[in-house]
Length: 324
Image 1 (tube, one colour):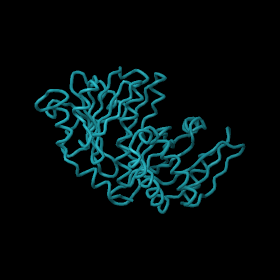
Image 2 (spheres, one colour):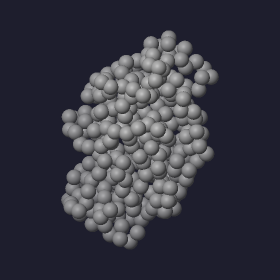
Image 3 (cartoon, one colour):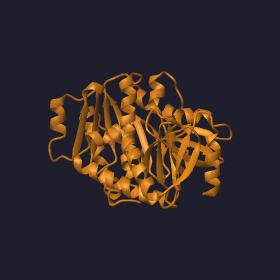
Image 4 (cartoon, helix red, strand yellow):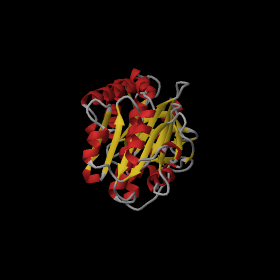
């Protein structure tokens, strides 16, 4: 379900972020000096993630992780990374009360986010190495602004693994440390595990639900370097809320219970943004999550999946997809 807020976010004047960039950097035409990468989601929304070369390691890193390609910014939602942070006294001058700018500073992560309630655009000032633990945390935080805008366009983020079988995608949703990654490793061909921690379900202009794989940041902190073809979405055929059990079992889940489970999963995926957004926007996002979940489970089936350590749970997934 798309919401009125999507119009507000998409119609905000783009000049605001360019004006802010001019003030912070002193560059007369910053938009002409940025180098960026494009990402188009299943709802049709284009994103441009950029930085100033040669010091644009943040965008290079994110582009490699999410398999993005160089592109132009025209008409796109913007995420722009800057190295360094504006002094606090200057922040107050650039973003006084009533200016429309919301500024969130996380000193322990050496990061500052500049954004507006009426715009999807984001400016990220970072003062830590991209390969440090806080660097990957900051990349995760920046991507939550994509979730934010997408929710207003009918999407749902999930704390879930995304797997694909013969062109059909399934979500395996569960809390942390309950076996999402293990389940992905156990899937045999022709199953394809696309991600094992977070996925974004978008609503296409044709009314289909498409699931995008998003990075597992703990893999990078552990010095492993997987890549995710985030732009290439899987058609969502089912959502499986799973738990560990002595024996494998798959049961249909009613829409009401599925909505409750999806709301919990989405709020986990959005947790860091919900911690520091305004109370008003927090309420708007939670309302949109609820409405989007209701719409999703009017179209996509949900199941309770119980998974044992040695069973062939994927056969239950395949049977559920055939029945669905």
